Picture 1 (tube, one colour):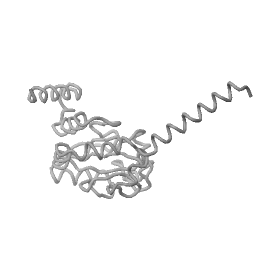
Picture 2 (cartoon, one colour):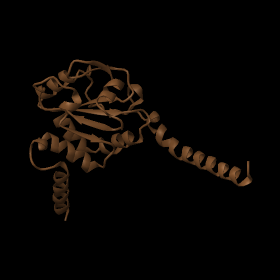
Picture 3 (cartoon, one colour):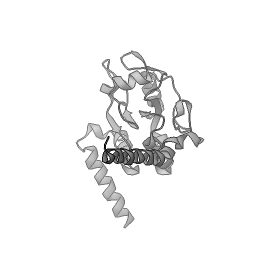
Amino acid sequence: MSVSLLLKMVIFMRMLLAVAILTMPLLLQGATNDDIGEGGLHTQDWFSITFKDIAEDITEAADEGKRLALVFEQHGCIYCTRMHETILTDPEVSEYLQEHFNIVQINLFGAEEVTDLDGEVLTEQSASAKWGVMFTPTILFMPETLPDEESSALKAAVAALPGGFQKLTFLHTFQWVNEKGYEGDEHLQKYHARKLNARMKKAQ
């Protein structure tokens, strides 16, 4: 092995070690916080604890005058940590969500039982795979009422929010769903832009 190749390997290994040292506190951050639930996931005390029967959860939310949203997370997800610590703790966001939504948390690699709208009994992990959820956090917004035809939760979903977003994108998506924007002509992006412009004008 040449000296130059050996030197490159040493430099590369040092870079990997530096990245590991820098990111480890973020990956372990959730393990030291008090809001950690089963499976090592961050949680909120106002999240809904259910049997994860999606049909029952939609009906229960409707009976309370709310909508059902499924939030997919995984242990060690730094974007999930940020969502919990900076977005879901913001009073403007948390108060709106608690008033209008029931939030059910699903562990991307979890083993708890989930019953899909079509009656299929799955684990959290197999349900996530069936519904095509690959990133965390991902939020699936369920319809206001049960669909007329047998369907999976993915097909019944009226909107999805995949990945980590800033506060206002997050909040506006929930508002757009609650206001049934998906039934109208105003796309979520245009709704978001309009809400941002109104906020900026109000702040002037």
